[in-house]
Length: 289
Image (cartoon, rainbow, N blue to C red; front, top):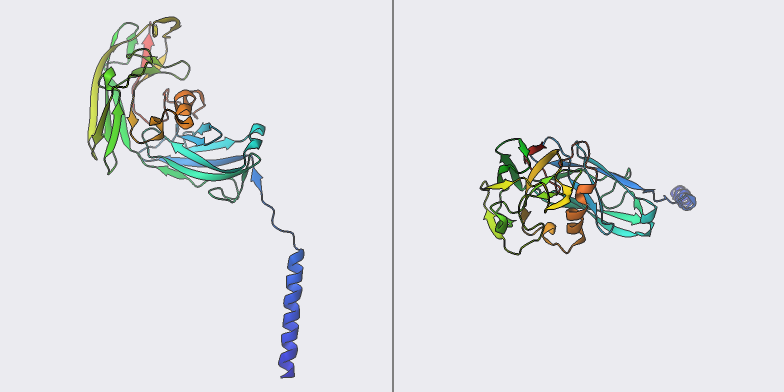
């Protein structure tokens, strides 16, 4: 009995010593990073550029490169930001997704929420909503010539999708020429004045909407000779909105960023010459002399 008691006392003493020693060990310190990285994979694509990665409240975004990789870097001006922030992943023809991070004085707190200990966010896989494609009657045009443009929007989901097209401006709404270096050139419409009339339509799975318009290649933007249409390559783009998404809420900061800032940022190795983040298969044409 005495032997058992002595052993118990020794074990208790060792335990107390260990507890005492542990209290003297330094507490783990929280680490931070001035950037975070991630990757976006897009359904039905082999090239993943053009996805917008946007941080709420900062009202700033970056684009994925051809492999889907992105890096978001914070600067000294971001030192005023503290707390939890939402990251939005957006393309106009894909379902949205999001993640969350914690900022402390403008730096990312590692190993919290969706950020790991190396400053990476788990790869996001975005599902396609619409397959958007288009055709023109030829590839080269002179100013003043007529262009015939056809576009088709196919629902590739297993649910009904509601789309909106400004059909007061024709079967495809506003149609324009886009190039990273210039402002968008409208081929129709009242020089950017948006009319309230439009059309909603619901597409059931596998169904599509198709329209064709014949328009004239203009010599300048809305008749302003100081903004001539330059000899270059452009993409022909039809306006399209998917109902119930942030892009429809024109009063939101995110919508304003997409409409006014998106085309200005670098979009990796394969710029799309477009007005919105998307993977549309719209035709490229050349304006020639």
